[in-house]
Amino acid sequence: MGLNNNPSAEQTLRDYDVVVIGAGIVGSAVARELSKYEGRLALLDKEPFPGVGVTKSGISMIHSPLMCPPGTLKERLCFDATARYRQLSLELKVSFREIDELFLALEPSQVPNLETLRKRGKDYGLEGCEIIDPRKIHELEPHVTPKALSALYVRGMGSIYPPEWAFAFAENARENRTHLHFGTPVTGIEKNRDFAYVVRTEKGSFKSRYIVNAAGLFADEIAAMVGDRGIELTLTKGTMAIFDRSVSDRVHHMIYGTFSAGHSQMITRTVYGNLLIGLGRFPKPDHKQDTTVTREKLREVIGMAKELVPGLPEREIITTFAGIRSENNKAAKGDFYIAHSPSAPGVIHSLIGSPGLTAAPAIAERVVKMLEEAGFPLIEKCSFQKERREGPRLPDLSHETLTGAIASDPGYSHMVCRCEQITEGEILAAVRRGADTLDGIKHLTRAGMGRCQGGYCSLPVLSLLAKQLGVGPGEITKKGGMSYPILSQSSRDKNVHG
Ligand SMILES: Cc1cc2nc3c(=O)[nH]c(=O)nc-3n(C[C@H](O)[C@H](O)[C@H](O)COP(=O)(O)OP(=O)(O)OC[C@H]3O[C@@H](n4cnc5c(N)ncnc54)[C@H](O)[C@@H]3O)c2cc1C
Image (cartoon, rainbow, N blue to C red; front, top):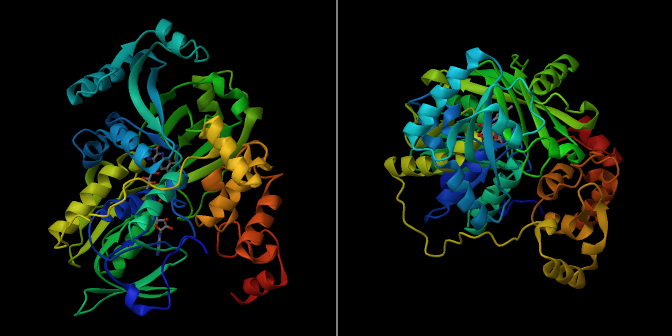
């Protein structure tokens, strides 16, 4: 079970034209874009589910290019992002919420910056980009601070839930004959005379002529495996908090106070309607997986958000998290580095930072063109299935379709996650589609993402997973590896010997 569709024992099926390493938003989007063309394609990730690296740990907004330094590649790749996501959301049947941006000036010294941004927006031809006065600001956002002097109002941006998107890209790539290999950490890459590369993993080796390195925070390590040793990443950490939906009516836009290379002050609505605040001033993390949230940092983030919306009730915060931001040493001005390897022909590196979610669909198109430059022939697949077969989640269905689902499977009338109203039928469907961990179920269905944060539904979800997969409850993990919520004798043994 799980997402993988590779009969792992058959070595011949591990002979690929292109291997994409990393199933974050970028690698998954690349795999889906590539699956429009003939070829033997594989998508590899060390985790059991797509989009659980940096992709899952951000504020998840589809920004305007105004967020990027002028003249950069990232700025170019953010143009038309909303239009791309709007179209993709129809093809892949995945949630996308349009949302407008408000950049506030709280001090007179900030007002000219808004005018500069507006002029840039006009030069880009961005429609719906205007300066508004305090009266209009409060008409749009009655709870915003009365100190707001002026705002830049940018219409037509968006919000997504990134793991759901990474899953949709990967699932659609699988529908188009891409082999998925999750839980497959890459440990080394060797050059070979007959078929360019052998990718070594903890689950065996993969031959490939071309490699796309989309390993996020670990892309520097993958690059070093093919001989590109000079790549370095500078890491910083952003902290966020999410509020219960009972206070969602306090904010309707993506509201920015100030932002710079060293901090960000914002509050927004997520795609599913919760308020989210972040990111504070960015400290350096201790290491690539240091996503701890400190009490002091949380206080700072809340304080900065309250400068924008003073009445935010912090007791309604239901969860906090942090994400690791990165910049590379290869591109100036914090730009993306998307390049052919200087020392390994057929290898393409994607080292990107924010706003990588926004740019991901355009990055995917660019990477596929670069593969063609490197010699991979782009022959369109007649059978390309652009629409994902699976439909939307139950809350998005019409009353008639819902009634039909319940009639064919009574599990759809049995509520398991009360906060988010997720039924047994949806959880079992998610398992059938490849979610085999508690977090996988959460990312696909939202079970456990509400006010109780899984306090009530984790155990019922765990036992449904175990039953459906035909294993004991002690075999189920939260997110792969050794993350067993229940310690059975066999999981204890794995902890000791594994
Ligand atoms: C706090 C924060 C807020 C952000 N907010 C926004 C925003 O609002 N809008 C926006 O556009 N962008 C935002 N970003 C940026 C955006 O999230 C990232 O640019 C994007 O998610 C990067 O995607 P990726 O696919 O390159 O990396 P990742 O999501 O990290 O994916 C890399 C994948 O590679 C896998 N991998 C790594 N090493 C190996 C290996 N050895 N073998 C196999 N697999 C491996 C990992 O498991 C992972 O799944 C934010 C980032 C942060 C940190």
